[in-house]
Image 1 (cartoon, one colour):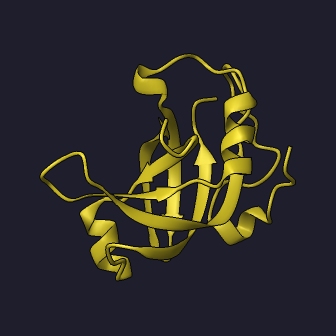
Image 2 (cartoon, one colour; image 1 turned 30 degrees about the vertical axis):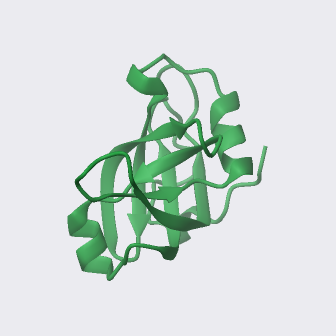
Image 3 (tube, rainbow, N blue to C red; image 1 turned 180 degrees about the vertical axis):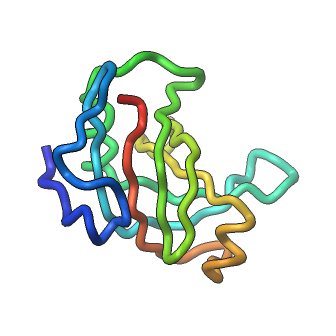
Length: 123
């Protein structure tokens, strides 16, 4: 398992706060590729969770959720929100949906790289 980055840098809860249910929460910080999902006529944008981090998240037993989703708290820049990451069969990784309000607030375009703080909540 990958070592945790300093939690203070993520704006997430302090280390030692333990989950009370199925699995422990995990904290990550990484650079992610932004991409548009082309399967719909609407604009749907996502950030790709890196392979190694996706593998770490996948290894932890948790209660199953629809579409294999994992609930998370995310941070990009000054924006923080709760959502779910989803497995993407084409990439073999999880993907993080980027809400329009976050894209607008953080000046995120249709592609590029963003710095993401991620805490799993399905714990």
